[in-house]
Every structure is written in structure tokens, then in C-alpha cells.
Length: 387
Image 1 (cartoon, one colour):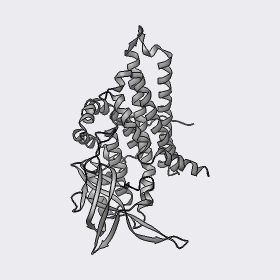
Image 2: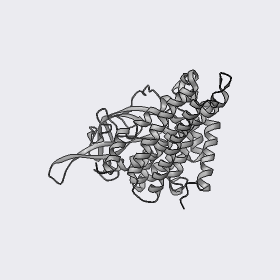
Image 3: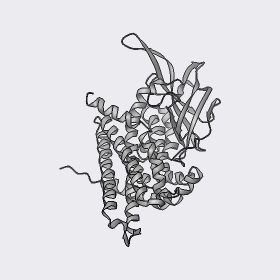
Image 4: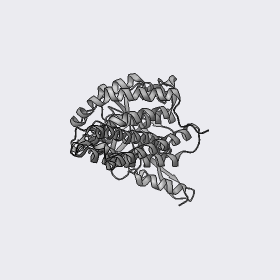
């Protein structure tokens, strides 16, 4: 028998985070969005709840849960505030997870406890001015000199890289060349941990973004930034491959966030359609509004099933790359489409920045871009089909 119902522990977690999102996050979301301010007080409470440690073992300061637990938390946060949700997603999937997956015992002992407690954040620097979807175009370099990596280059659009509690960023860098089987050479790309405060490493002025205004995002510059040789994360030359595997997992998390955003638009629209009256009746009694909201619910439901399936495959140790791409594709489009339709349901009120649906409208577009564009997901799916 196929059962899509959540187990008790998952349901309890989801309900707890939903309550927290409604009672703690939502009331301050508009303020932080308008001020473009980072919600330190909210992040601190999330750390106390153990959300940053959900998928990590207790021995590393985590909660002993799994990646699906993280996804459920992201869905509930994404309903009310995508900036808060992406802060958690990036902190875990891109900040702490590479340390857990590929770090040495010493690196795990040093970094994981503070990251899992939410007392520190970390970023992952992959994207560059000329290397986004084409991550193999990395130009940032790191060369060994007297037991240190000397890093030069720049990164773009790096989340959690410039907060007061940012501990480090892990970057991809060209550390040499390696020969292909056919005798040609290609870049050797490795990942290196660069702590905050390293001379020569700088988080530049934060971006002025269309959405995710309460999320911390900076360009980074490296000018002869020196870090110890032991700051290499994982095997030298495996940085790009390791990051791709992290992205596969991260797409499930982003899909969960997108599902939450899509569902948040449904919930807001249903409430408004029952309250708003036009031509003598609540607008929810008119079939045009009913059909629009019904289609929104169908999108959110489909996105949820897609990320549930991808997460189940991942936890079972089965291949999940294609399912993660499908989930990310479906959820990102559901969030964007539902935000557009919710804005239409709300009419003029949906065009006011302080309204939650307006914030979803601005926030959701990046879900079709970040952690692999829609086009990249389509490419991965087509490749799995043998095309």
C-alpha cells in the first residue's frame, strides 16, 4: 500500500514550525523586507529550536533528524517569509552540509557544532561574474605557497556571506590542471574554506535585490587571501563534483521552499476571497475566482508530491538527481504562477509592497534561477531521457 501521510514525528515538526512561522516570523516579515534588514532575532530563535541542526547527528551538535525534516521546516517557513526560509536552506545545504559530507574530523569538530546551533552561518561561493550555470568556467584561483592557499578572484550572489555571525565561506577555485583520458587538459577545481576576517577576503556591499530583501547576499573579492593548506575541503580536484552532489540535495530543499511559497499564496487567497465582497457577494462565490484558486492548490499539491518523492529516494539511497530536478522545476514554477494569480485575486491590495502576496510575487522569481535555473533542470531531465 502506498502511503503519503507523514509519520507522527514529521507531522509534529511541521506543525511546530508552522506555528513558529505564523506567530514569530510573519509579524516582522514586512518590516525586515522594507528595511532590507537581516532578522537576527528570528534566526536566533530558530537556532534555539534546533532547525539549523535538523539533518545532522547529535555527535556534531545536530538534532539527529534527516534531510526530509529540514525540507518540511523550509516549506512551513516559505509560506510566510522566503527570506527567512532561504537563510535556513543556504545555511544548512550550502554552508554546513559540505563540511559534514566532505570535511575532515578536525573541520567537523571546529565548525559543525556552531553551525548546527545557528550561532554561526556559512556561505558557499560558486557563482562568478562569468561562471553561473557554467560552473566549470570558474576563474578564481588558489595556489599553494609555503603551506598556505593564496586565493585570488571574485564570487557573485553569495548567500549568508556578510552577516555579523558569518563564520566562513567555502569557495570553488582552480588549483591546477589535470589531464583527461584523451590527453587534453582541464581545470582542476577544489573547494577551500576561507574564514571571515582573513586578510584579503572581503564581502562587498550587499546587493539591492528585487526580492529576498531580508536575506544576506553579497559579492565577494579575494586578493592574495591566505589560508592554511588544511583548509582544503575534501579531495583536491573534486571540488566541482562534490558541489554538484550538494546541489542535487539542495534542489529538494529549494523545492520545499517553493512549495511553501505556493501554498502560502493559496492560503492567503482563500482567506481574502471569503472576506472581500464585490457586487454584493464575497468574491470567493464567483467561479472565476474559485477556478483560479483551485488551480493554485493543484500546483502546490503537485509540487509537494514531487519533493516528497525526491526526498524519499534520497533517504532510501536510491538515485534521485532527476527527481530533484523535477521537484525544483515544478515547485519554482508553482511559486511564481501562484504569486501572480494571488496578486490578481487581491487586486490593488496585492500590488502594495507590504502585503504578503506582493512579497511572494517579488521573491518567487529567484526560485526559477537560484541553485540551478529552470533551463538547467530541463537539461538534466532531458539528459535522463536520453536526449
